[in-house]
Amino acid sequence: MTSFMSNLSPIGPEVALTLTALALLVGGAMRGERASNMISWISVAVLVGAAIFGLKSAGADPVQVFGGALILDKLALFAKTAILLSAALVLVIGAGFLQIEKIIKYEYAILILLATLGMMVMVSANDLLTLYVGLELQSLALYVLAAFNRSSLRASEAGLKYFVLGALSSGLLLYGMSMIYGFAGTTRFAGIADAAHLDASMGLVIGIVFVLSGLAFKISAVPFHMWTPDVYQGAPTPVTAFFASAPKFAAIVLIARLLLGPFADMMVQWQQVLVALSVLSMTVGYFGAIMQRNIKRLMAYSSIANMGYAMIALAAGSQRGLEALLLYMGLYLITTLGMFACILAMRQSEGMVENIDDLAGLSQTRPGLALSFSLLLFSISGLPPLAGFFGKLYIFLAAVEGGLLWLAIYGAVLSVVGAFYYLRIVKIMWFDEAAPAFVTPAFVLPLTAGVAAFFMLPGAVWLLPALERWAQAASASLF
Image (cartoon, one colour):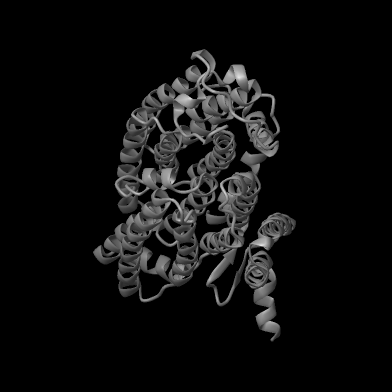
């Protein structure tokens, strides 16, 4: 009993989320839809509380629990904190949307909790089986969330498409894991690392390719991106905000832990795969976005391109690259959630609107919202001196140090393409004739957008150094 409790104490946040989700599920079943708002706010409190609990253990030494199946180190802490706070913010900014659209259900917050729990297991995985359990727990909850608006044919189609393609990616992942197990003789990361160090056999290489293919689906990397635009457009907007933030962060950290941990000695093999995924993702993401008129589909292609930049940092295969990856993804989370707060405010008297042209003349009707949205668009496009510029700069420097100068140059050139469609939105907001005005949004939406935009400003001098120091400490966990 003492040994069991010693395993549970380091994973207190995971235990709290599990017990809360089960308790709220029972409470929701008993009280029905009347409990929806209460369950949402309890979930927010638990998510924030779990993040604070995790931060209190920031200085603790790495620890493995359940026989090494899970590892709790600073990399896991960094990722879990970001995931927990992102999930909490999604619940807060999406509450008004669900109520107005009359699709608020008590299951919504519980599914967010379960998906978040799966992500927390993913980023702490130290075993292939643990990796798969966490990934599938997250995925099953996300499949349901994609089709959460049962009265919408488009949402049902999005959920079905996500489920079918997700099942395919799970098959690829499982086949790769079986190959790795067959040639390494173990599912533990440490044992796989020993096997890869002694003999980088073709079987392990094939296993890595299949595992990366399965995980590439989770981050919408090309050519495994085909689900992303349709699911982003069809899912309820708060769900789309969740898809674009926390799951991407969790999956890219999982890929980093897998490649820079057990497969560090096989960098020559997996680096080529990452470079190809990165080039394809940036190219398709940016050029695909140019043709979009729906803001949510544009955000889908934007996320594809941004994952391409994240893989540049990962392909460097160094501590500097992992540090740049974590810094970039931290800024990406803030920017993305701020932009989705602006998108959630796109409501006219007739209902929600999603076309980019509906933003026309926003500076005249909602100048504060237009300013926040513009700053976030400038930042994600990489324009100096905003924080997004430094995120990309750190990635390019890590790539150059890793001998990938041509890839850094290619990424910098494509940033110009990205700037075109981001700046087109700014032009529409500030210089086009005003479209019908948006109704007054819930105060939390412009507040979230404004705070996110403030963090991108050069004046927020404390954010970037603080995020950089935390990323340095987290990246040192794998080196």
